[in-house]
Image (cartoon, rainbow, N blue to C red; front, side, top):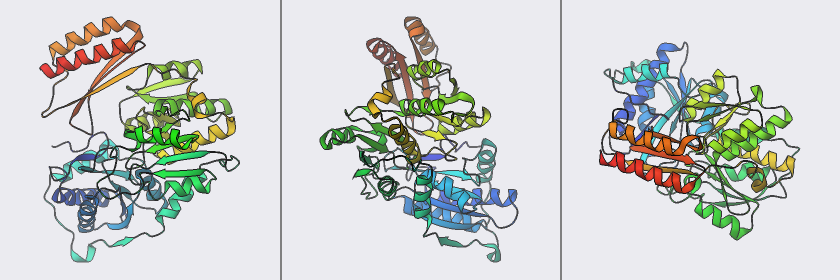
Length: 445
């Protein structure tokens, strides 16, 4: 049986299997069939997408697949992934579907799913879908075919939901904020949220054309935002990725503030006011050593999950915790929403700034990050990292050099054809040298 699901749904290059119209037609039918088999009564799904040009194609394919399985469909148009998580519950749908490749360029696309509770499908449901995909596609009879409609009020409902997570006693009127929407799904939402809460907002990269999503902008490339913050003499900058589930910020000095630092800022404030449930924060194998030590100083528990926000979510639930995230900007505030939501996470940081009367630079400076060198290696075929004796020897050598002052993480990407090599150490020169050495060993194989 094929394993189509990666760390964040099904994803790949458009036109190359599995990201083709015929396959996503089959996926729609397979998901719809599984839902029909496991739920009683009328089954419905809602479908949203980011701003990629291929979204039009796959929206139609998925719609047809669901209808052929006898599932009703609500079409939402361009909408952030976390908005779909919220609206799935708000509209009482059986599942929510997002057509997106998140932070990837426009040439890629994919699909991910939320359950009726607004959380991503569990492994059991994904396995059932993958098994169904291998079966012949058989449509229901004409009397049972699903119906489709468009929801016009979805945008306003999500904007109001985001605003409801922010303490209205806080005043943002003294803040000048630059917001980078990555020409993605937050382009028609973010400005309304921040302006209606009182902030002076300047928008950049909020004119998507189907091809410019994540292109030299947004959470994956903050250079333009950093320059704009300095140019406009803004208090801070906010960057989202293409589907609005990643957040990176920029302080008034133009310095980048990543997901680890933002989680620490929120955790510190919530610990102080008693809001941090179980005094626990969840991160991943990529979480910076500096953040781990800073949390320890706050007497907070740190739990390490596998990379991917779905794994962070699992650990949050298993440990009765409410706050977790990744350095890449996935931040989950379970007391505010059921999924990682970049707009809501940004609002939590702004709330801390407002209540503490402290700027973003000073808040992040309470945590000292270890230098972290991350190198991505493009791969044409599957790479066996476990049974590579040369790599094992090289890793042991580097680990002995780093001792207790650093660490190594080598893993395959769950969303792209990449091997990621990460070395973290309090000595940047040693971290760089070590990472390059490991990359050379992997490439030589």
